[in-house]
Every structure is written in structure tokens, then in C-alpha cells.
Image (cartoon, rainbow, N blue to C red; front, top):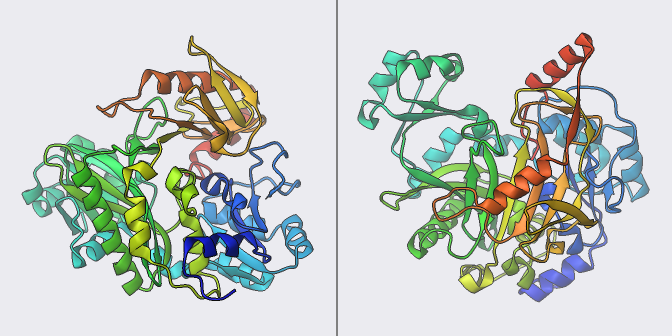
Length: 487
């Protein structure tokens, strides 16, 4: 078509799309519902969360036993799987591939398969994903981080020396990794020595003053016309009812009153600045920024950059502003298409910042929090669940989209761990998405949230592992290659 200049053009362009577009990942969670907007869009996943009922998802039937060490491993396994290769060839053998995570090997396989990767090069993404690099980019464009120093740490005494101006209550982060595993809270020597081996192994760490803060997230897309910015979301972090990891992300809330208007405006301004800085670095497309809001001063601090779609994408792309215009991810696909476009980004950002454009959604990422390891013998179906007045829940009907939950008494649940899977500490059991809030103004879980968590957990049942050999294998599976965030 001719040059795209408005939202209607974008809608029509993707509705009429004929070239295959794939999202390849462990699950389809991050881009739920995008297939409703993009013709010929398919998910290729390792886990069948929908028991074969969802027709735009392809899951290879033959699984070869192995432990994965990363999402990249899963994606490379899928792309080299004969059933997946046959599936791609049955749909023309070419197309566009999108991922949650990928590496240089993924790029090589895609080239061999005739797939175009709709992201900047893996090498660049890896550099942008570095938490140390994020601080430096932010500093260059006036997006401040929590007071910090960047240093190689050799001992507790050395830590005290380099961080003297920050006080004794510190948060230390390594350059890469899931924050639930690579964020260390240190206020004394004993706490330091719990993490000393990991901290001292790093060539450089980010050492921050510990502040009284709340986590938030905002997603955006850097395009040739400017950076499109979504709304600020609150983050659920470290809730023991959801995750065993003290600093672990375990959900989000989206609602118009998230923080004050001043904080929301500042976060959006910083995100736009950072997106423009990413373009200068050569990065374009979808990204997410975590911000830390100081609850004592209302200062907005840059936390970290995720140069990709994320766990928050499932909310960003189903909210009212996305459905009145187009989901944010479509700007990403447009940026990596051959289609010419010139969009008024300022107009879109102004519209998306309007509180009337933001409806209220929440999601919970429910992990197994006990130290036990067992084999699942029962697991809930994906679909819409309903809560009764007494707080009990029951399965209502099948659906693949969060919008099918029509009220706060309903929730869309997407199962991750199923019958026959090991249930171990940190394993993802599933994601629950519902309308309304699941935290109160003090950032504590509401009674409704707790009822949903208890209700979903009650739908799982496991069998103790009696055979010592199987138990040893399960423990190795849990603490080894498979204990990483797949969402």
C-alpha cells in the first residue's frame, strides 16, 4: 500500500497481511491476542498451555528429554525441530520471526530457514540489556538512576570503601540476569557473605543506595518517527505468596491512578528521552523500562532496561488505549517491515497519556514457592475462571484472550505447568489476568488477590517422588538448567 500516515492505515495494513509472522517462545503469554490484529500471525511454543484447543499455536508433539539453560535454548531447540521446520515449510518457508529472547545462534538458524528476525541484532540487544550500560545511557540523556556507583568489588571492606557516600544499606545488581536472582540486598557483612561469590565474580556491579521505593514499568517502541510510549504500570515484586525470590517480579497492575500525575508524566518524559537515546545507539523497536519511585520524595529513578517484549506486554497490548488505536507491538512490526510510514507520534502519545484511555487490569505470575519437589498429577485448565461470593473459584469456560474475563469476579488463567511436569521451587505454575486492581494503596495484596492465588494453587496436586533416582533427577532439573524465568 502507499505510505502509512494514520492509525486506520496501520489497522488495514496488518489486517490484510499475507506474509507469515511468528512469535517463537516457551509460551505465547507475552503476545496474547496479537493474532487478532495481524493476518497470518502464529505462535510456535514449547509448552502447550491450551491443550491443543488454540488453533494459531503450533507445538511440536515429539519432545526430546533435555534441560534448557535459557529461553534462547528453548527457541533454538524449536527452530531446529523437524516438526517445526516442516510446519514453516508448509506455510511457504519464509516469514518474519519475533522472540522474547534470542542469540546469535538463533539468527544463524533463521537465516538458514529463510526467516527474517524482526529485532535489532542479538549482539546489540545484549549490550543494551546490560544494567551497567543502562545507567550510562540514562546519565547521558538526563534520565537519573538511584544514587549509585559502578565498580568491581573484591571484598566487603572494598564494598564499604567504594560505596561510602551511599551509606550502609545497599542494593547490588549484576550486569545481566533476572532481577529475582541477581539483585542482592546487603546492609552488613553477614548479608554480604551470603552473596560474596556471585558479587565478586562480576567484572563490574551496580551498587545503589537502598531507598523506600515502589516498582513500576512502562513499555514503549522506538520508531523512525519517534518513540511511542505506553502507560505507567505498577509492579508486584517479591510477594511470598507468588514467588520465592525476594526481588522477583510477579505481576503488574494497569490503572489510570498509578502514582501521581506528576510521577506519571515524569516517567513518560524519561521513557521518551531514553527511547530517542536508544535510536542513537542503533536500537529500534519494542522495549520496557523499570522505574523506581521513591515514596518519600516522589523522585522517579531509572531501574533497568529490557530491550524486548516482556511480561508486562500482555497488559500493554490488551488495554483500552491499544484497542481504540492499535496494540503497541504493531508499531514494532511496522518498524521492521518494508512498508513506508510517517506517523504523528506526538498525537498518539498525547492520546495514550489520557487517563480516559486506560482501563484497569492486573496480572499475577504464580510460582511454586515451597522447597518441595514433586510430580504434578492435576493442573487447572487455561480459560476463564469465576470467583463465588465465598472466595472459592471454579472453571467457567474456555477462551484464549484476557478480554473474555468480563468482570472482577472473573479471571483469565493461563496454565504453564501441567500434568507430568516437575513442580519445584520457582517453577511457573501459571498467569492470572483480571480486571481491576489486586493491590491496595499501600501496595499490599488485596483479599481478592489472595483468594485468587489460594484458589488457583488449590487446583494443582502432586505426587511425592518415591524413587531416589527420579527424585535426584528432579532436584537437578529444579536447581540446574530449568530454574530460569520463561516469561
